[in-house]
Image 1 (cartoon, rainbow, N blue to C red):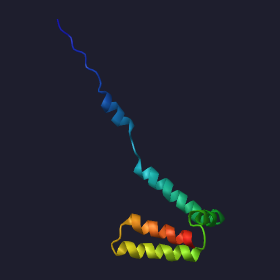
Image 2 (cartoon, rainbow, N blue to C red):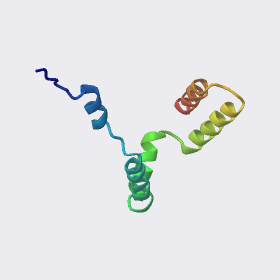
Image 3 (spheres, helix red, strand yellow):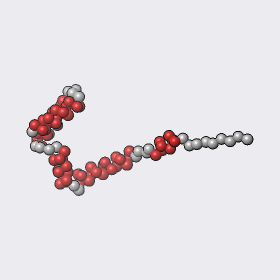
Image 4 (cartoon, helix red, strand yellow):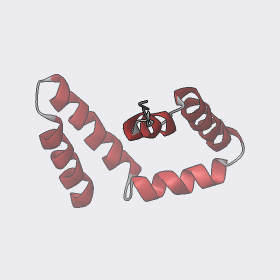
Length: 90
C-alpha cells in the first residue's frame, strides 16, 4: 500500500500576499490633491515654497527653460540639472 503527500507551493502563497490596489492608491492621491486645493491653502503655499525655494519668477522661468530643452530633445537628466543650477544661481 502506497501513499502520497502533496505540499502547497511556497511561491504560490507569496504571490497571493502581494496584492496591489491601484484604485485605492489613485483614490488616496486624488483625495490628497483635493485636500491641498480646498482645505489647506496656506499649507500649500508653504509646501510650494519648500519644494521651489527662492524667487518664484526665477523658478518659473527655469522650469520653462527645462521644458523647452526637453521638447528640443535634451535628456531629462541634463535639463533637470540645468534647472537646478538656474534656481540655485537665482
